[in-house]
Structures are given as structure tokens and as C-alpha cells.
Length: 171
Image 1 (tube, one colour):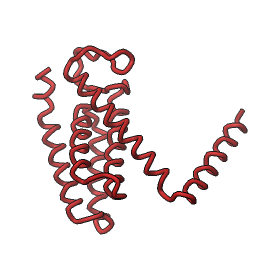
Image 2: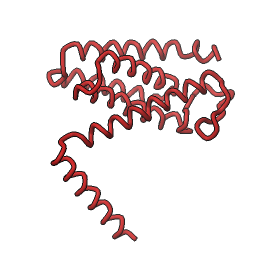
Image 3: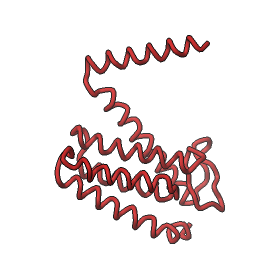
Image 4: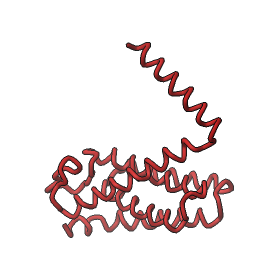
């Protein structure tokens, strides 16, 4: 059975290489779009939980009495990782010219609100590292404003984290 897995891996690599040669970066575009959509839906479900609404069948779990919301992932740190991948999807979309910068900023705010609601310290560290990466590789960014938007999103996330106790008490 191990050989079957290795053959499947070899086949997947070959298909990916062929796809990349025929349509450069199309596979990456589709993967980032799919991850961004999944992250946005999960954030919507998370806010649904935060609002204290009834669970939607198998899509959300009942979280009464908890302050960490995890949508359909059942673990806040995993949701935070998905949301950070969604942020990278936003960035990729802007970088490739597939996503309007203003829309991407609004989507990033929505995702960052979700990251704050997870209360995942690992995600906070990853956000700091992403911000530092934007500073280090600023010459490769699409424009100078991109770095300012990243810094503004960092401030927005800090405000979300600071306001979190107040937000959780509202429900």
C-alpha cells in the first residue's frame, strides 16, 4: 500500500509540473482563491457563533459559555491558521492583479477580526512575522502603499485584540 501512495505522489507532482508549464501560476491562483473563499466562509460561521445564534446543522458547533470561537474547525488554532492562509490569498490576489486592493483590504479586515476572535497566540506571532516579511521584502511589493496598508492592518488587528473582552461580553 505504501507503493500506491508513492505512485500517487509521483503522479500528483507530474500533473502539477505539467499544469505549471502549460499555464504558469494558474494552479497557485486557484489554490489561493479556494483558500480565501474557505477562510471567508469560516469567518462568517465564526461570527455566527460569536453572535450566539443557533448552530447550523453540521456546519457549526454550539459554543455556549466559551470565549474562543472556532467556526467549523472545532479548534481555534486551526481556524487561525486557515484565516492566515486566507490573508495570504488576499495578498496573492492583489499581487497578481486578480483582486482589487480596496476589496482585498476589506476582506483582510474581516479575516483579521476572525483571527482576533480565535485568541490564538500562535496566529499573533505569525502575523508579526508576516508584517516583518513585508518590511524586509518591501522592494518586491506591488507598491509603496502596500506596506502602509499592511501596517494599518496591523494596527486594526491590535485594536481588535484590545477590544476583544468588550466584544465577547456583548454576546
